[in-house]
Length: 385
Image 1 (tube, one colour):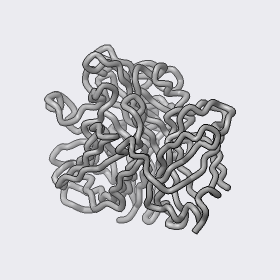
Image 2: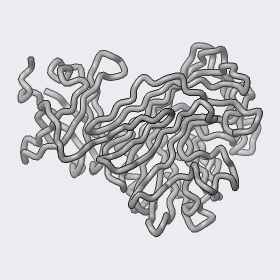
Image 3: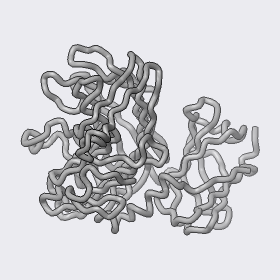
């Protein structure tokens, strides 16, 4: 067995301040492999301060992922930790409670969200999603849902033209995204993993394609909650044609009605576009929606990763509370048929996406949305010795 005190990690902030920054590093190191599936402790070599960390087998089944939350590391500086086995009992971490067709997620005992995946649903989704002061930042199972767009259920994945089938709406002729099973349903000191496989089906149950939705939810405070999604579209049942339509949000949010831009809230994108007139149908690296809920100013942003297809994405974002990424709707958004964005994923091929959802206090400026985008696309580097 490797001497735990021999394992040192040096993290470099790079060009950006790091605070509330998830760090995940895949490691092929015999000493760290020993900790796979366990909670561990990182000790700051200079101050002796300890923080929780977490190890688990990586998706490649060969390396081990080491995860922790990096706080208070200024741009241009480094920090060195030693690794040891154990658990810091100050915090409960990210815990999952399983219902019949739900998974409740708590962060240090504080309710954060519920993942809903019932077989009779149109698709799986998260609701509620709670931010600062326990405010609901999304709309879902509320009295407002009967008023408009019943299919806009909080936080979810959907698209409106898949082999000419509507998997965006919830009408009698719409298709469904049906959960087939989970490969991961685990909590931990630093993060939880909810990984599931879904079939995209016609209303009669014919399979159009498969997806993998891999969600990670981090142990962060109310004003800095993060949900990561690694998403794969898989042409498992023949060619898959994604039509050019505005009706889609590959990563989609419907905000709490009191946050709507039509009610005094604000939409803002990475280029400084404000509200629907300057953001709908525009390409941007991220899009943020903020407003006041029960007296608390809150916001939620979706980050598009630099490695995603057709980066940066177009946005289907409305003053009435909708915000979704859509890479296939360019002809519709540009109002130019020559810019048709439809795409055919050939049988056996896959398309991969990465998104981050950050819940924050205030608007995009107060929430440091632009700065924290670099935590996602330009994360700190880690050396292990």
